Image 1 (cartoon, rainbow, N blue to C red):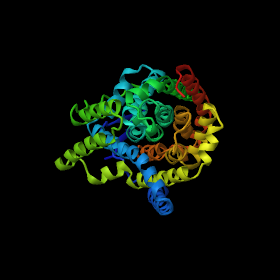
Image 2 (image 1 turned 90 degrees about the vertical axis):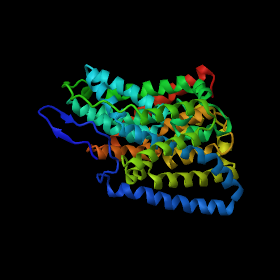
Image 3 (image 1 turned 45 degrees about the horizontal axis):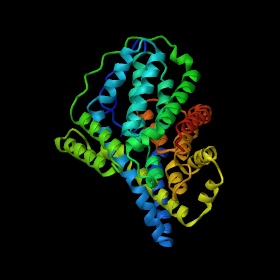
Image 4 (image 1 turned 180 degrees about the vertical axis):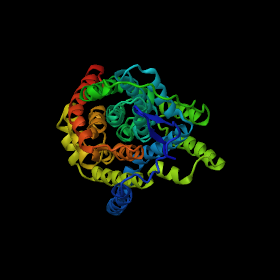
Length: 403
């Protein structure tokens, strides 16, 4: 069900109901991305497994848990969205913030929190339409919140292992709990988030200073199944070395309850998961992880650079082949600077749409909300934000002694 938006004299009046990401608004070319990626990825995986079966098994063993985890988080996000948790948060921000700047600050906090706990893909898939409608309900320009959701989700994905699939792939060698990971990365993650937010705020300062109208009140969220699932996922992500199976089990259970009661549709579950894209990226990641195990090129290259060089190589690789396959390739063997590698893999995707799965989900969600996102504009913002946020994050790693 689309959020109905009717023009008002100033701005929009928004009905804050759960979002339907199975909208036909998605461009036909975008709908082809998943199947094409799945076919090409599986073909590469078959070849890699046939030539180097042992290396392919090792790569698959390293890569499967992140994809299972994100599937569970997306399912939990779907239920939380159906309960109105995201929409209510957005509208609460709209009513509490007296001006566009404070609204943007609140949005930064919300995006950072959802990204940290429920993964950046969950953040862009469910928060993008909510933030767009929040801006419209106040009669403000939507650009700061629209582009902010994407860039801030990528930038804020250094907080916890489950915040980004690349984190789980790269630190698979280190066997850290969520708390231990946070102790290494919290300052870098915070620095990246703040710097990225500052870049967007400066670039969109006119929109943030626009006149504000009182938004319509939102319905109260349902504090039940979705909230319980979110809390459970957060606990598992923080305390467990490998939270993938428990989190996906929670997601399956809560979605199963909704399906059995008729409160959710199977088609929407499939669309939210984006199964062809996940399958395709997993296959490509395993194929490149296989290459990284039988070819010494990546490890040799990384052995000749410091943490700054590691981050730059990782950022460039993420744009070339997507950050998930890049993580599998570069971290096929134990990296010398794993946290610097994550800075490049997580922040580098803000440069272009090929960088991360989050771009695909963001474009789909924004178009569902009736917005017309510009890849060129997002990339221009990213071209400024990425070098600055990477420098800030790497500087924080040096200060904390995490490499």
